[in-house]
Length: 342
Image 1: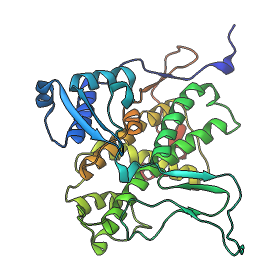
Image 2: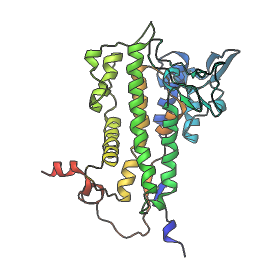
Image 3: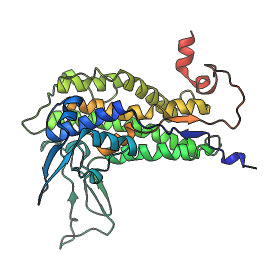
Image 4: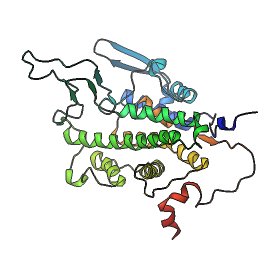
């Protein structure tokens, strides 16, 4: 006899990612590495593509093919560059994870009037006015892009693995879900703000246009206005992300509810949870669409978010079910549902 409390209400689907998407991902990654804009068919005809790059001390090269990268992404749902002998996949000014910690005490001057400072230079232009710095025990991060993305992946799998706790009343599972939503919103926000600052402070030749009046304020504005920064800064409007933005708005509105608790009540069914979790991969796709417009490389964490497996609801019993009414589950605590019913 099984313990009902151990029943997992969620299961990851076993289907591989669609080859159409992994082909597009592979083509995007390769084109960014070689500085081209070849079609998928063109890259496939090339078969073996030579890639060269250099670190501070050594020159490297490798050969790759679109099919090899696509098949790897299909089977692994991630990109580990070393396994394909590729250089690190990232955009330096968006992703460059420069950080350090100081666990020991401060280093004082001889007369003990100040402590030695340790600062991390930003990559948004030499005029950017902030430089993260510590002079005693603490931690410095230049950007939290990568940690946010990695936490989205971690929490997604954790919520599915621990879905037997989703019906608990101790708030632990829900707190992880709230953090997942927060990080999904934060990773879009930080990307848009980095783009804004790169346009404002970027060193010449700056490929981005900055018109403060046209862009408007950074605070107290709608998501739609922030996403419009992309077109105003790059000249390439975000006009190919309708579905991704729709998913993101659902998650953002849910995050707002769980942050401000207006209304002060909350309810969900496991079918609600499935519908929300299956939108998380669209956050990765939205990051991809944004980077397409900025014309910069993806990174391995974004690729993993895009390729997250979908989730299915696993009920304890197989009784027939009626469709969930609009005023049941989350709909019973959603102001927008009340407005739409009027």
